[in-house]
Figure 1: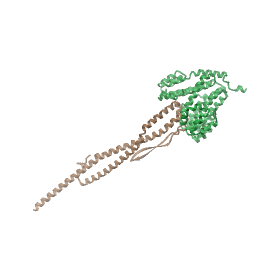
Figure 2: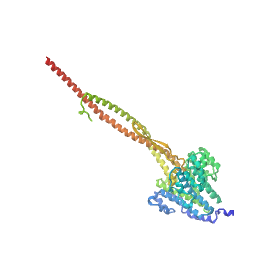
Figure 3: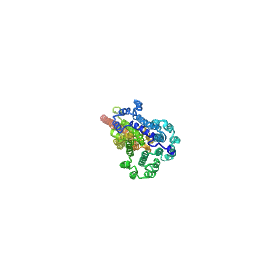
Figure 4: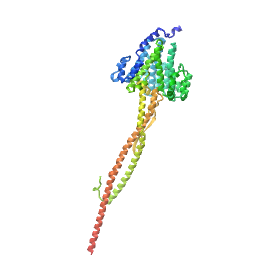
Length: 352
Length: 204
């Protein structure tokens, strides 16, 4: 009976169906060479023309001519990303469905972060600044959070959701006056849920993919906060509390590490291959380069997974991750082209 | 502007004009001193304004970084991150330099960029934040220079007017009255001599 309650094994019909569908869906994604040719576009109209031929056609054609700019396009890209996530949700049920539902919550988490940042800055925020998630796919009452009079009231609205632990972080937030506390807790909650679901899937490759992302995010967070000279207590509070190849002791010692020896410390971890070529960046604290390099490596690993593991469940995770990378890449291209970034500069910030 | 022909050539007028000339010359000296002080102030501020070229290059560099961050994050995300940065509070005061009211800007609260969660946005803010301070200081210096130079030019015009027109004109009038008075004195002397000669001849 216990066995029956378990998640379908990767070879179950549900998983096979899902993988088969994703094989079809992946053909809708831009290939690296498409991204490369888009980055060469002379202006935004060339990009729009290319977008009108693909998956984005319906939404892009709905943008009035006078509103055709990088801002409207970015809105469409993230709407499409949310749609792609939700499409998989509709195809899955049970524990597999729960896993993808929790995976898709990264968009919800992003929206909560955006609202809390605005509340912290005592600024008004509109729904236009949020990733459009259909109401049926979220338990968070974003409109109420937006109109809440302050940050505390906004956090209070999350009381009935999985993000309730944010309420306990208010004290720490008040102590350091930084939303980084909440962002850490949100990431922690997100990955905790996702990790729990991933473990239930009994698929080591899925666990490895999620665990790696989680640990790398923690390492980047530690390096970023250390570059800002944040206190160890705050760094530890902002970390994702679930670990894969790292553990609490390693994370805590990294948070307390001196700036001059942090490179040696991070390259002693399991993730040395991602960071060993970044000595200068780590020592200078140029987090953007570290972040880009690490996520670019993940992007390449996902592309590799798509080629090498086409019949595994991790193929679906790689697809979702590539959807995200695509949204980021085409946002970068559209915005960069509108701002007049040169092709070389544009290519240097793309995931290619 | 000549007083000649319009003033009575009397000793009283001469004395008054001499007093006036003395007063105007003192005024001219004071204006010259003011002009020099203003020039000194402007010179000292010029050093602060000379950084403009360099600052413009730095701003262009920071804008490149801003474009990069904006492109990487997209409008919505970038805007959301920007909301975490507190405002920079600047208060404006004024003080007087040789009677010229000049502005002084004080940065009451610097923007807090420590909340920025994204690496690329944080690095951009690290570049832009000190530049904002420099831009404020440059703006202050330029506004001061503008006002001081205005006053310098006005003072210069006054000194020139005094030196080229008013003083020569009064000095000319004084010379004219002195000449007239000398002539009158000579006339009087000759007349006295002549009368004395007539009286002497009658007595003889």
